[in-house]
Image (tube, rainbow, N blue to C red):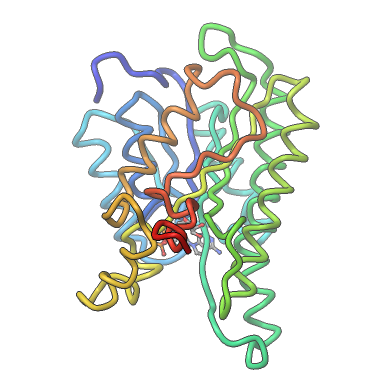
Length: 269
Ligand code: NAD
């Protein structure tokens, strides 16, 4: 636990928090004082291990199983969270997946699964969080904001991605959903922002970093010269959830080692 925790007394829900980026975000929020719900859909033992890691660090956490693309499961997860921690202050909409294929071979089921989890799942969780923020009301000694929502987007809300049309479409959708929610909710003191990770070393993209050849190819896209780690995103999430970023609303913070700087042009195109 950090000595001057930025999120003391607040409660956070992180979806898809038993792996990769969500795991690191959950641990980072807890290290800064938040009570954390570790949402998962498969591998309960991995979720339990995250809870244990947080408790070993002196923090508080519980795990809750829910499929973020299912309305009833999302609503039940929020009820369980509110029963345990009293309310929610921070939602990190992180759960996501890929089902890649050339467009002409992409089945409707793979299109819908990716949109349902990556985009509709974020809507369903955001809606429940906003209902609870409004019900609970402002607690000024806890935060300047009524609530904070962080959407896990991607550099692919900007960079088109051949062979991943469903995934890139979901991330493009997140950008406009996030901005529209931010515009609607800012007058109510609810801040909605996104994080746009570049290439982060997690199970979602093992093929891109698990051999030296793949990693070297990937690094040609990253001016900063290293693949990102989940903890790089955890630090951004803590700051975006804290009052230190109180004037940010409707913004995407790209944490990508410069991937969006068009590195192909660095030697004059
Ligand atoms: P990951 O596969 O390690 O984690 C994804 C998590 O989402 C897992 O815990 C998985 O179980 C969970 N999940 C999947 N479907 C779910 C559902 N229906 N309900 C609840 N949880 C579900 O991958 P990651 O890299 O940690 O990805 C996390 C987020 O970051 C995703 O939204 C992904 O698109 C985004 N992202 C990742 C990268 C990267 O390079 N790793 C880059 C940009 C964006």
